[in-house]
Length: 32
Image (cartoon, rainbow, N blue to C red; front, side):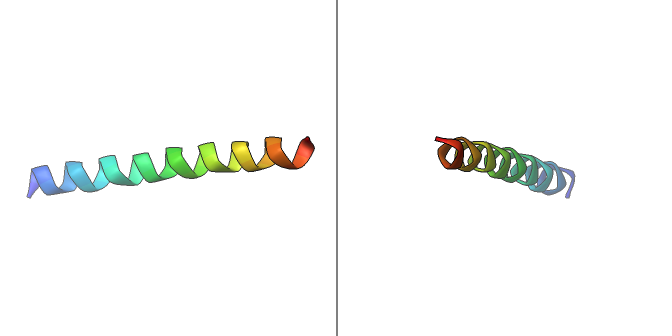
């Protein structure tokens, strides 16, 4: 159970980082 919870948290963090990176990329593309 603990391992599954950690994996879920890690994937959520990765998703968040990915969304943030995509948002920054999109913003920089719009500015250009």
